[in-house]
Amino acid sequence: MGNKKRDINGPLIVVSNRLPFVLSKNSDGELVRKQSAGGLVTAVAPVVVECKGTWIGWSGSFDLKPGDPIPESDPEDKAPTAGLKSNQIIPVHIDKSEFEEFYNGCCNGTFWPLFHSMPDRANFVSKDWKTYCRVNDKFADCTLDALRNVIKTLDEAGNHDTVPLVWIHDYQLLTTATKIRQVCEEENLRCKLGFFLHIPFPSWDIMRLLPWDDQVLQGMLAYDFAAFHIEDYCLNFIDCCCRRLGCRVDRTNMLVELAGRTIQVKALPIGIPFERFVQLSEKAPTFLNMPDDVKVILGVDRLDYTKGLVHRILAFEKFLEKYPDFHEKVVLLQISVPSRTDVKEYKQLKDETELLIGRINGRFSKPNWSPIRYIYGCLSQEQLAALYRDCAVALVTPLRDGMNLVAKEFVACQIRTPGVLILSPFAGAGGTMHEALLVNPYELDEMANVLNRALKMPLDERELRMTQLRHREQLLDVNYWMTSFFSSMGALKDEDEGPPKT
Ligand code: G6P
Image 1: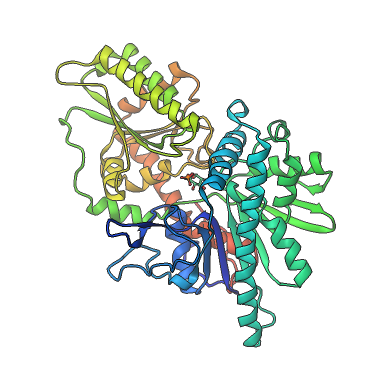
Image 2: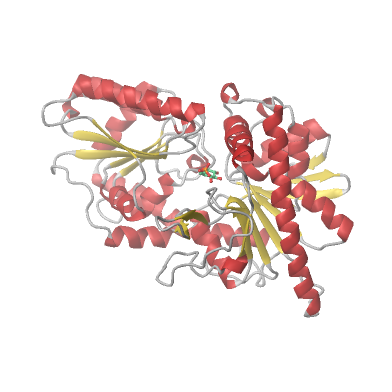
């Protein structure tokens, strides 16, 4: 099996914008940990626990002040981060005004829309960019402190050949490695620097719109290894390095050379904790109470303009117009998880979505049926697993998405009568989940037709498609992804066995 556990051959330092839990005050004014449930945390936290590694990140609230002790986890805690001791956590302190310019401004007002190829939504504000670089340097300073400690411990134990591994994540930290690399060279600190981008990497046409594209590319080339979800993003990155910085590149072997250093680039599609979702769906009580003859079409997304929610709802309206036999026989259940609520684009999307749903429900509802049910809020993992298990169709139709884990979580939870996955080709997942019904989210008529096809699909075809989809996600789960990352960096103790056959 490709996803069996492997040990890494050096101390591990993980750096991400958010720590694997939020630290905030409870009603008694005590700082407590609130767990995050994402796949990255589920996979990586146990490894950090086991190898006594370090996790560096922002605490997720302004309640934690510099010098405050990090609370230990609750002894009853069963979360994957429960074993992380407070001395393994290094919080990066970001104050409110920095946060506004770094997170709302540059991360989510510039990089997020630009990297999702939506340049019209991107703002280029040099103050925000400066703060972004300053905050990235703070992450670098914390990482360097951790690195010095780790190297000291290794040297004291005579392990002079052991090289620490620093794994930095995502678009919030594109320039963090610049300072790490520079100081490591000055102080002769040894480490391997690896990076994973969780969102798309855009084409040169888009990237060149960024006034600071050269500094971003140089930052990303300060790594030894940079990985992306799919080959297209890798090739875009390599192309940008070639055209903007004049780097020598090898597209076949995915190598980029800058100032005598060679950076390895690789496509490593992320997976999910498959077995965990299976277990959740096995034990989750029914959450949907629908009459037997009503089918549920499910949408689950962070409320983000990249997810194509407005297009999806308009396509559902078309479907109701074109296929009236389905009135009172289907419900679109849309779960929208609040996200980045201080950013203007996100506030506008909330209003637009609510208005649209109100209009469509007003147009089609009967006394005992409304076509759209809408939840703006967070559901527990167990509730989500029950919905994924019991719905007839999952509509995953982003306009652009790095990977999209909802598509994968849905198939993992389909342990009873199989339903159908409708997927956008503009999600990274669209490149591998071939047995889904792929549909262009901009073609509303086509989306309506595909919905009709999904709802009428015979059981044997649904079974065939779902079996293959589940098989692939089970093999290429998040542990496989993580092991592949370490293996590509030469950071595994065992030999790599190569990819499993799907
Ligand atoms: C995406 C990004 C992550 C980010 C998450 C939630 O998946 O790739 O880095 O953490 O969205 O967004 P937030 O802004 O709440 O961290």
